[in-house]
Image (tube, rainbow, N blue to C red; front, side):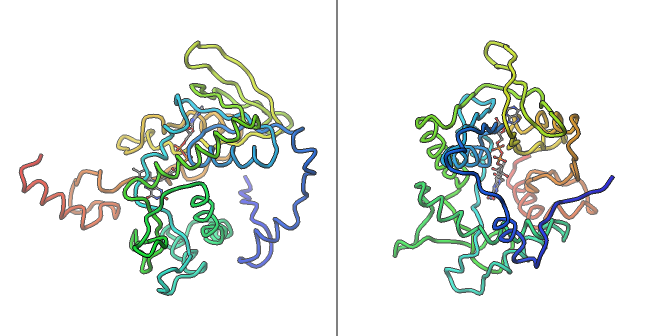
Amino acid sequence: MILDGKSPSGPLAEKWDKRQQEMKLVNPANKRKYKIIVVGTGLAGASAAATLGELGYNVEAFCYQDSPRRGHSIAAQGGINAAKNYPNDGDSIFRLFYDTIKGGDFRSREANVYRLAQVSNNIIDQCVAQGVPFARDYAGYLDNRSFGGAQVSRTFYARGQTGQQLLLGAYSALSRQIKAGTVKLHSRSEMLDIVIVNNEAKGIIVRDMITGRIESFAADAVCLCTGGYANVFYLSTNAMGSNVTAAYRAYKKGAYFANPCYTQIHPTCIPVSGDHQSKLTLPHVRVSQKRWQGMGAS
Ligand SMILES: Cc1cc2nc3c(=O)[nH]c(=O)nc-3n(C[C@H](O)[C@H](O)[C@H](O)COP(=O)(O)OP(=O)(O)OC[C@H]3O[C@@H](n4cnc5c(N)ncnc54)[C@H](O)[C@@H]3O)c2cc1C
């Protein structure tokens, strides 16, 4: 099997810009002729569906919650990183890129991580424009904090509920497109299978979770934005909806599935089992857990 990440060619910092310049554009008058299915309406799916709708494509969005606002993205707390260098403490796109690569044990795909660092600043601007109430300092400028072991302050946050506030922003943008008629939302709908035509995903099979009715939907492209699947593991801090139902169905239809152990965990929730535990049990976790036990909790 050939593993091809399809990274664009050229120097690291120019790869994705170059790809963007080389891509063929779709005439604005033709966009409405294309239909795109977006499965999942968490931060990834809601923002993708809203953006595609705003561009003029016909979008059908699916989720199994009763509202996109209940995507597991709502649980994210700490904040979102961007290389804006507001505190002038030496941050840069390259430094955010490097820290992220290091945080991923040097195994992430470099071109994509560089792109993430590059567009991080635009994402904060977009969220602010959507009305996300990020924390601000007393002068009214966007505040930020140092997070996750970073040496610089680059995390933009909204108290301890950043994910919830971001999701409300994405949901507002999505609702606007639903009202405009470019996005049709199907809540309480579970994707059961993917339809493949000539090796490309061209549709999905869906079960209505209220009536049990099974229906098929066709499109020109399918985006799977179905989130994490950590509930396949015994210990998980993810909601029960963060399961592998969509990823497994794509895998069964021939999608490659790499490194399933690369999934988010919260080390603070892993019970201490012994002195030789993996690095995921951070020293401060053990100290605080012992203190907690010392206070009488079990
Ligand atoms: C407690 C916690 C704290 C976190 N803190 C941070 C943080 O500080 N900073 C940070 O950057 N990240 C943080 N994260 C991670 C971040 O929140 C997630 O990576 C991100 O929100 C995932 O978004 P998503 O849209 O991919 O998935 P989700 O929000 O999980 O959305 C998945 C969507 O897919 C749908 N779906 C799934 N399967 C199917 C199916 N078969 N059929 C139909 N629909 C389906 C669901 O209905 C849902 O709409 C945190 C996560 C948690 C849990």
